[in-house]
Length: 175
Image 1 (cartoon, rainbow, N blue to C red):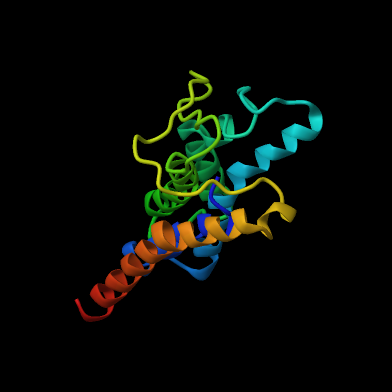
Image 2: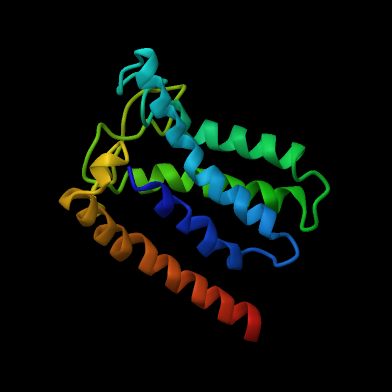
């Protein structure tokens, strides 16, 4: 997985690519939370759910179905009748949530992502996997491995996200 903070880079970057009237600070915060929620599946380890199972790590909570369901739930409960329209809000939350899985598919470790769960538990990676996989657990982050992860994420996620945000901001402000 990418680290928790890195997952939130995608909704932050994309926030300037959506209509300004629709993207409130609350929505951007919700998008950042949605980009992290899929990793709550690690709780399953405490209950004996193995990594490769449907409800295991990078299983159902990393699927397209989960991203759509979570986004719909939030759109029609927390953001109902918000400016900008439900479809824009749903799309922002959906991309924010699904970005988690897509970033995980770019990492160089793990068993892959069950993108099509619950219909299939097959696990997928992208053919190109430049992001150093993050350790599960905070203690491992304070090591040489953790430093490699941070440097990898700065290069492959934060730098491109910053460029996207900057270009979007310039276009929005001066375009």
